[in-house]
Length: 188
Image (cartoon, rainbow, N blue to C red; front, side, top):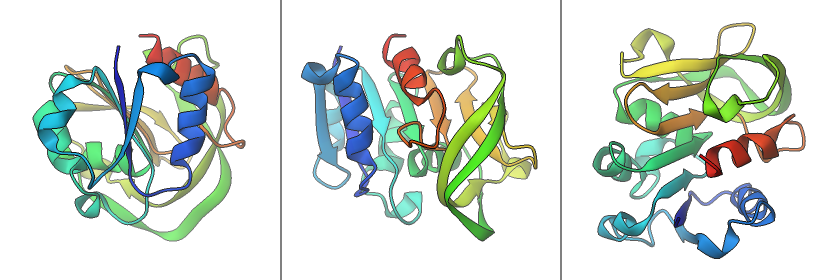
């Protein structure tokens, strides 16, 4: 299994990389910045981890095109900006929050999914973002699998493909069960 980490120029990327290495998948992992890899070079990877990053998905190098080209054939997990890119790739809009949530611990409630296998139905996650997927524009291809009590989407999955996104940061110290979620994805 070969893993591509698409680095969206974010310091949190290497916290995710550290978890991947600690879980024993490091020797199969390559890390490329979102503008330092060609779309055709992605073909050789089995799993793709889309990192957090600043800004909006359309400004994140090849990430939007990668999702359009490989979303139906690769196992993809998007984190924060990567999650938002998944939403946009399948037709969702984004909402710019009136209050930025950086370093905020929030409870979420999750649905049954391989990411959350063996985890409680509700737990705390670390959030660092100013945008969320707009549920009113969510296409039928995407299913919400986690939300905050006030209804903000915290995770989605594609109904037919192996594409998932989490708005929160599994690698954050504020997130309970973050390593377990990464193991669930990497081991699937």
